[in-house]
Image 1 (cartoon, one colour):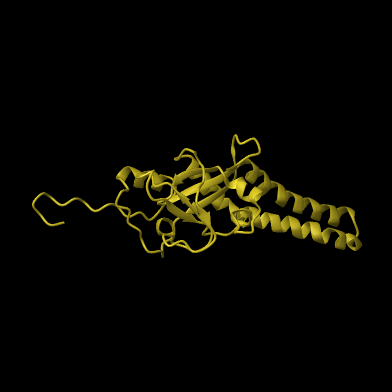
Image 2: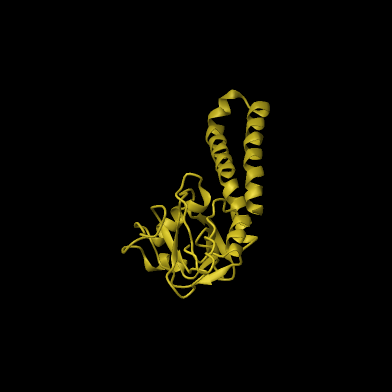
Length: 211
């Protein structure tokens, strides 16, 4: 987040500074030398603004869920039958049944996901690239949303954080998904972490009555 804030301030400042130098100290003949730096600074400013909401959502998830270190995590580029969106997917343990069937989360937003696409790869992907994804860091609840990351070079901290979510818990137009094992505590925790559309478990029917 600190790096993001620095970039959010630094790139607009660089654009203004370059423009100031060009207008105040140089003649119009030097404009072609500043065209590329000015365009790049503007481009990076737009990227920083676009990624700010995702950075805030990532921070919010990390405030409510601890990191888990996962090994041999299934992942792929093809369509996953249990995913709500197509594209890159990674399976994470179900909090209700950690040793049971895993739950996939997909890269719904593909902004800044090329690194993950390249390292997940396919049969021809180099083993050393795939090895960067083992182990994986994960914080969140795959039934709703989470943050995935890889280890730094020392293996001591997460880096390349990426926000993941299920459309049913985040997008208004998505079809709602009901999770029978999700407790009220699970739903409230996910809501505090940023999930917006959660389906509560149906109330149990009184004894002797049909549900």
